[in-house]
Length: 266
Image (tube, rainbow, N blue to C red; front, side, top):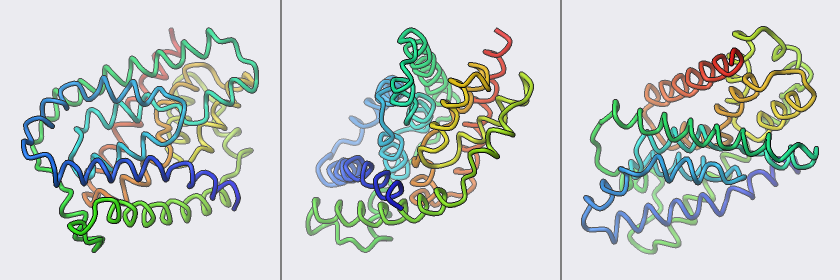
């Protein structure tokens, strides 16, 4: 319960900032073309932010994508480059700094590459969806930007807390260790699925397995590429297009699995 509460509290500042951004765009930004121009560089910004060692930017990105403030490519760039708890775990094990930087750099490059590729091939034009989200939550956004952002934040934080409580109860680390050990092709697929567990447990377990020499670097990369933390929880909560959410999930697993397999053979 304490772990679930701490994990949720860490996310509140990121959620609050994302809602503030959404409100400002909806109420203050008259020229939406500025937003479209900024999104041209979204994957670069996204993969850079995702590389920062924290778990909040994926939640922030999911929120902004649900409101169509950022593109799908930017969302994928953040998901792929996010490391969640990998860095603190490696530092606590006194892992060689060269290995740490190599993994972070690979994740950054892959986030950047696939982010731009997704935006090139997925050019779906949509208007910002902020007003619709406000109407669903009955937050009276027109009264106060800060008040409405706080209401949104507390509602999502409560939902994340419940999910974290459930996951912390049912996750069996020994069972995951058993399934993660496999051949060069199957192991990355399995670890990429493990990475989808929407809290910090997935990145912690995958990092520990790699540091204990139970899985290869390629298999570890697969799990860490798909480990978007609670960003996936926020995506499914906020983005009402279930089919699109499932496609994003499939795309994330596919990219992570293929990259892991390639690195295993390299």
